[in-house]
Image (cartoon, rainbow, N blue to C red; front, side, top):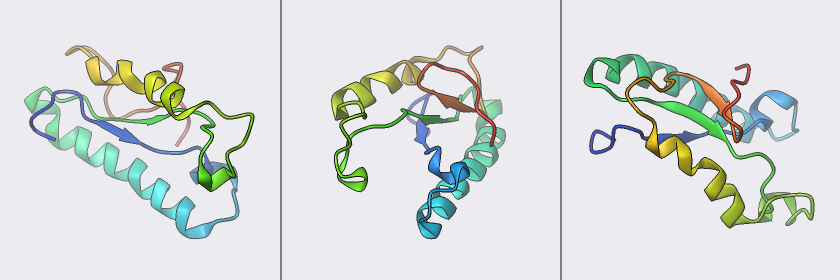
Amino acid sequence: MRKSLAPVVQSHMAARLGWPVVAYRASKAAVNAYTIALSQELQSEGFRVNTTAPGLVSTKINDFSEEGKSLKEGALSLQRFTLLDKDGPTGKFLDWEEKEMPW
């Protein structure tokens, strides 16, 4: 991660919405906690570390939901987070529109 000033850590809203898959939810909650710790540890080096949620993306895990974005759309919605400047957010959980989400 130290090779990029804007590493992207991806999370999922299922970690807090009650989706009935305990291990999946716990792993996403752990990613959120890791993001906070990593952002604090690397802040003095100029890194911006955030957790991002692309929204519903049509994948095998949701039986390729027709309501979801394509994989390409999901990836493109997160692209701007790789280009954050030195004053950009850090230690946040952001959705695809760059709105801060509750942990």
